[in-house]
Image (cartoon, rainbow, N blue to C red; front, top):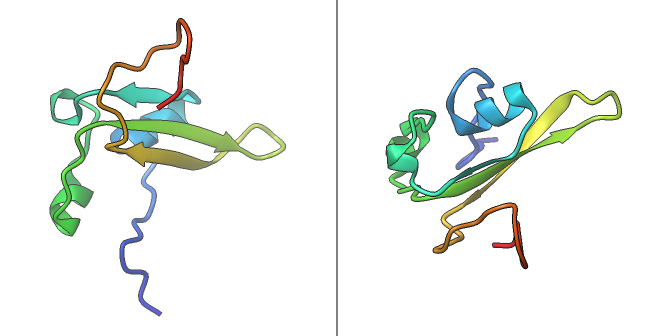
Length: 88
């Protein structure tokens, strides 16, 4: 079976890798300006990632087993303060 559209996770690369390594959620408002952004998948798939949120998920031992990325879903600044904080 061919896994079209699926990318193998590389924990040493990109924003998802940084979220996994540092065990923290990362919000990037302008991917092109981010030194962490790896455009390999965009180029391969013909996609343009403008902004994203990358959040690590953990197993029962606290090890990062997955990183959820939400792409191009916000057009306003997201912060951890105030009403609606963290909502896209």
